[in-house]
Image (cartoon, rainbow, N blue to C red; front, side, top):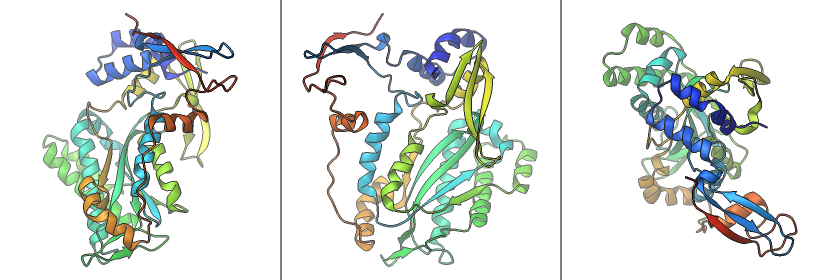
Length: 363
């Protein structure tokens, strides 16, 4: 099956001659092209028992590369398990009207930060209101900028524990099937975002902002998870997801790329879409984030400062066991992914697989 790397390998040179790329886009494209090839160097795996020999090339570790997210995701998931509470969790998603897409894409750093800020303040302020919950909450937020068809669609995913700490230091649980009213969330988020957007970008088209004021913004809250155990695994799929995974790409023929996508407006049916390779690359590169931008953020009692101060209290109040969990080593994580030890031969199972012939990056 073709991969993003194959599409870049065949069409990136012609794409660069026509389109102006940012530094981050150039870096991501080059990294994906070189990932797990001789250009990044590597080593030979050699089994002295059965004679198995295979080169293993280094990964690019770029966060936009479809090949490089699995190990990072497992490491992140393992680190987050210590933060879990023995309660339900809600998945809340904040989106903006498509009319704002052009403005946001032209001012990515400012607008992405604004999305995080407004989503967090909306959740925290409404949860603190005694009319709804009356407690200080924590949550984890993740930025996605794409839809299933690779078009620009910025939105924030939030995973929120179903409760928080009151001013008296007690745990206040939300209702099991309800967190906060979505219409109230939507209107507060809309008001905050547009008001702050005018301050951040005073030259923004006022007519555009007026149109957005008149629209109902989409904020929705998914049903709670069955139990806390699946929360981090679920969230890991969001934190380390890239614009499109390689397993969704079906064909690369005659300059066209065909991939499958889920149409949520048509009962979530799977469909196929075919784009010219140039258009596929353009859509993919739209989702390369600004350098150094943090796309996963923690708030409230899940923030770095909040964890030290309040997370232990939250665990005691929710009946969560205080277990000092040891982080898995890199070898243990690889074993979890491969289903075998990295030193074990995949053919005969011999545990003395040798790594030889370390090669430097190709010139």
